[in-house]
Amino acid sequence: MFLSVSSLATAPPGSPNEMSNLTMSAPTPTSQTSALTPAPNDNAVAPAVTAPAFDVRNLSIWYGEKQAIKNISIEIPAKTVTAIIGPSGCGKSTFLRCLNRMHELVPHTRVDGEILFHGENLYRPGSDPAMARRRIGMVFQKSNPFPTMSIEENVLVGLRLNGVRDRHILNERLERSLRMAALWDEVKNDLKKPGMSISGGQQQRLCIARAIAVEPEVLLMDEPCSALDPIATARVEELIRELRTRYTIVIVTHNMQQASRVSDKTAFFYVGELIEFGDTAQIFSSPRERKTEDYITGRFG
Image (tube, rainbow, N blue to C red):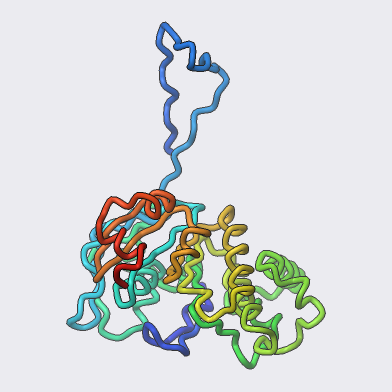
């Protein structure tokens, strides 16, 4: 059975110490072509329609008697960045944790509905939550390098837990993960130093390197820049834009400017409900729902 670094987390939500083809057929040309329409190209390839990474159906979540998520249905596209916005306490982080079953670490949590990950129900009887967490990595709000481990050990801990012992593979994955996290050039001569010895922004990128070292398919990020200064935030945002070509990324953020800068899709949550979901440009320029407009413009939240 595979284990994941994220499965070591035990803190409740909000804790400052939590661990971490279908193909569209080309239209049939008509007998006449408009002067403004290019002539049909017989060699053109029809655009592909990518199946969603997550298909969430009628999801409701309770902590004890309190309902945190209310009957949410949403399709999150693959290889894109989806931002989840909304005021505090609206269920954003709870929803994010359900995507890799991290919420199950909180006692008295109950889920109703389905979450299909590439068509596979994550909550089917007998499914392994540790495997879900390996395929769906997570980066938390507060950077959390393991304090007793070096930079190198922090990156490789997930691989070692999964039984990887080949030194060549470990070295290759170490350098690749740190390069992908835009950290290699900064720490390559200090790999044996403690993970806590580097700056906060570097620690957060180290946590991203740790998450991607086990080669997940998805990265979940829960306010990854909330504790960082503007320069470190800009580095992490740049990294998110670069990683979108390889991973499906879902990010929770309170920063409207950040959501508009890094995401392709945006979902607005309010009091446990999904109010609106669409292209980020549309959400921020012409939202369909009044509540969305009020939140984005600062009238509440």
